[in-house]
Length: 343
Ligand code: F6P
Image (cartoon, rainbow, N blue to C red; front, side, top):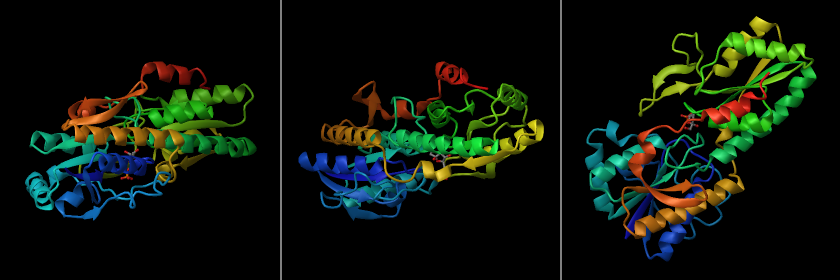
């Protein structure tokens, strides 16, 4: 069988571990590989490259993706679905391994329904995909954010400041809650629970009156304010090809408001794409490798329309549509654990 592999959406540390595992296991199974460049765009525009043992040698520890990525939506392109099917046929591709998040796997799910032989591997630093307990990339992002919070603690304390740390995660607060708990944040704001600025400020005041002269606030980019119109802070008004808003700016917004209301000198730090770049943690390399090997087995066994997923400590097959059905958000128990340490 000739198998095409692609990576779509925002990159996540561990993508190269998955590609390497798919290539090595497919080769062992006697399947031939072809790399599809830049996600779904590669299938629309015939961007292919050969993939063999040599091309995946030395990539396990590298961030990014050797296949490059894009947020191309097949279903936003004129006759996109038909074009994908035609190009696959012309290139002799029998099946596809799509490595991606909600959007990439959503396209995969639709293509599967249109008759394309496809399996998926879940990916996102946001950890917001249902049907899998963790996505690779998340652990690396949490470690980067935790290290940043540790570093911000010392400078905040030295200057008697409040520092607001803005982290990624879109409409789920996984990165914020994990890095905030691990880094000992004094307040963590997540999209799952709307925040009230007066309450945030009074928690900070309580802490400072009790003798502390600095505070760390971790804010998820998608956190929503109770009173504010719309509630979300947007970077701009543009939507991407999957209809997502462009989040960003909550760190600055909160820092200004906190300083204005409390009088405490406040700064903000936006971690941004640093959370996605660079070398994956050992956890993400192992998870990516396990998912990639499993996806190659799904291909070999012709289990089309499924993706590899982590359930507990096992890798299992789940239907693609289950993965993209609903967002996996932070549960109340975890928020309560974090809140024990607020203020
Ligand atoms: O989905 C991953 C993610 O990193 C989000 O956390 C973030 O909002 C978004 O991608 C940023 O996307 P872009 O790569 O378009 O800046």
